Image 1 (tube, rainbow, N blue to C red):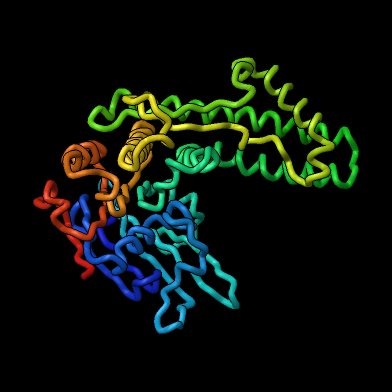
Image 2 (cartoon, rainbow, N blue to C red):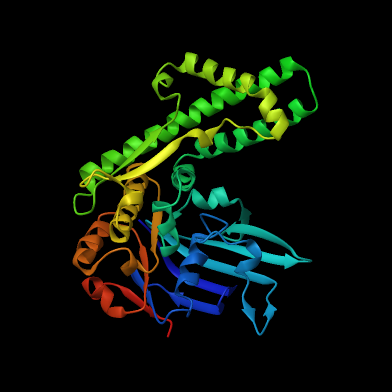
Length: 362
């Protein structure tokens, strides 16, 4: 079990200074809108994603007061795991409009990846509602981001494919040696095939968890497909087919100066299993229920793989109605990890009021 037992924030967005010892694995941050509840959770999410839970630019994280923006911010967390405690922290410095970021474990400078090896933060916020009704690329990016935290090789493959794609386009534009281009395309084909396979493995796991472990919530199904779907079981033949597509697209890709065939060809849809309906056709409430179930399913994947995580639920009442709130808290308790919640009204959290630690930002 992982939990933040103390947090110290300096100059993060609306928080000039915030300090608190955390006395429970259930943490409720409440107060009026605009008072900094989401910012508090976002300061934690930065440990897992340096764009934060709302995808901000680095310069937007600095505290701003009276039109003067701070040039330095720091977030310190004392993390309890099993029978020991670790300090994790990060600093952002803005010098000459260039923002640098550094992560630390017990004051020793480390990579963001090393922090993630200790603990990951999984979140759900109203900002994520668009995942349910926007196009397939938004859904694909959502799946890829959390899959990358579960599987660093998957993240590396996405990065390597992008680099090779840029190299290939540069070679095409410069009319380079065709044999060299073929070698790059062969590497790309192998990596792209691996990306397709790993995406499908994770989606199968999510669908299985939804069916077997989330019976108190809306059952979902994620569907993924592309034009190569029937050939994915034949690895060698499929890789050769992908390489041939790259070869056939050379003239087009050279003319438009970008790679037209890659991870983006996968189409992803979410379905409400009870209604057998695409999420884009569901009501707002049904969409939120599906999204909540998917996030909980990801948390189950972390738990099954032995990865430490902490949950962040921003404005949870916008994702779940009062009837299901009790079921939701029972489901979260099964993870035996810390969960942070925000809300405008303390009454929303009556089901856990006897065990939760409440932070009033009023």
